[in-house]
Length: 167
Image (cartoon, rainbow, N blue to C red):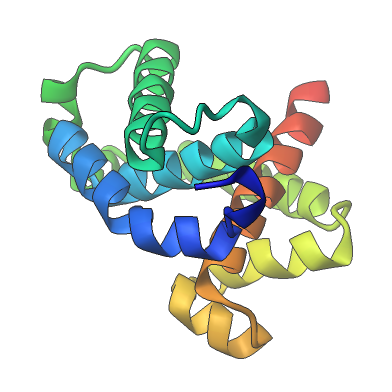
């Protein structure tokens, strides 16, 4: 397999499920598995020039995914066992008016920062996180491939995080 023959869409579509399922077994969290899978493919395509053709791409991408998951868990200081035990209901039950006001202010602040993004990223973030559309729905609405939408969501989130970190 020559690097020139490596097609982004082909590599993504043929390896996505394998990487996603690998991560899903490790952390038992659909959202986290999807996020880390997106990050892994993004990193792989940024570093494709480092890919050694003597090995399978699948082996390389799983290695990247494993490292991405470990980095995430170190950063968040979460252990695999604890991920299953986190329930959103426990957060809802402890809600009070002061927290509600703080959350509303945070929401407005983040919304302002979203508006600072380039139109392409602003639209995709709003569709995914404000309108709560699935990746397939966004793909249909924007008439773009699912894999392209996944990468754009990852990039938009990365840029938004950089904007928020500067504050």
